[in-house]
Length: 255
Image (tube, rainbow, N blue to C red; front, side, top):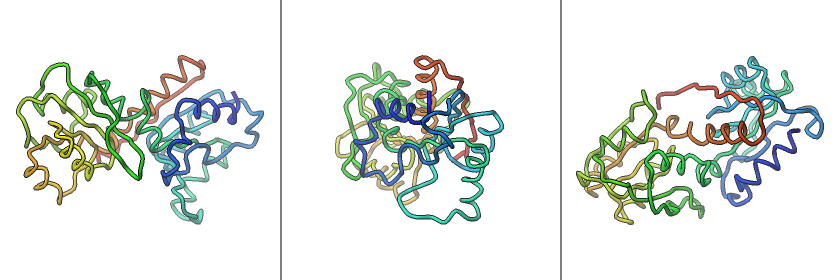
């Protein structure tokens, strides 16, 4: 497939046009020299478009790097210093960059949040969590009650550790809301909906006492760890449906 054909394919299920309030420039962020004719044979996947992932993707012979966090976020940024180091590998190696931010958080079933919900086998799932007029998360009911420690272990992959587990709610958790990444502030929506637990990526100091006073369980699973999910689900879809060679570039931040 060519780059432009892949763009149509990604848009067919990621529904990028439904998330126009996202400041990320979703879609093709850097094209290759021949987007209508050059064949894409290998796609690298990563969470972040940074110099390290770009150089690694080029080293591995990728024709395209697909990421959750791209290089362009709405403004006009000079391509100098660190930004140049991130852009240069794409131009030098005629490698394209594709970014999918909020659409990949929200997508059912290939997004970060529904992917995390699937790990928990959440039942009766519903859209949850408003951000800039877009619903990006998911909520549901556990098949059987869990403690907050059991919930944290189940939602993360083997070997991963949560940044914080705040056991301030019910001892036996049934209802859970999930919004990956930097959505700590949205715990207030979980409180309003009287959920037993809320899962996101990060935690801020000023929220600690609010969470405690609101008597809700809170898990900060790590911004990076909660957002490797979507890119890997898209990777698996590409392998099954298109038969293209793929690779995941894992560069954790431990944050």
